[in-house]
Length: 270
Image (cartoon, rainbow, N blue to C red; front, side, top):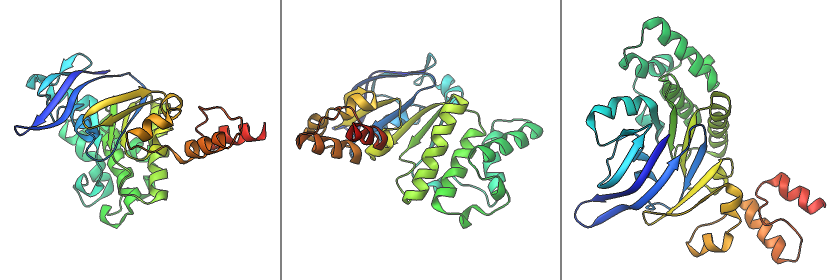
């Protein structure tokens, strides 16, 4: 779906945010990109729909090169982004008008816009707030509206750039459940940028960034079974994986790739 080939991104004369990053994002998968602040993960995210263009290397979306300005509109129709602060994406005073904003700018007929808005609000569980004022909603609800606005544009890829970072635990959980449902039920490709390792557990694949470089990729089980290596890079493990490693260190016979509470509980019971 998206291919990054030896992507380097420089800002200014000496600053390098990405160094020779190569990564394929497959159609229909959920990919989590993790790393510390300053690791380059958000810079990478902005390359996926041509908000940033590589200094060296190339990014292609279904074969369309992001450096070609003739491709920009079609790429942004295919790849929608939801950012960290939902207030920066809400542009009207009524929820349903906000969700309709994107499709209107694409020139979609009014009847189809209405249908898209209804389906998008239903998908994020916000139908009852259609006529509410966005500024009266909680942070989690605002982020759900921002996601609905993207869904109404019917992108093939949804990129979430630290979209849960400003939310409380309940808001985070609500957004993650919606993202998982959109991926599984709608078959939408999801790229989730996060610094919360627990969120990466739900992905099909995890990419780990450090200092602008891609240092590790694999399934959550593969990545989070390499605890020592992650810690050597100053990265932590999800809480369940940390507990797993402590139990193994204490002599308990537990699979090294257990990463969910259920897997750990089953192993302890055995």
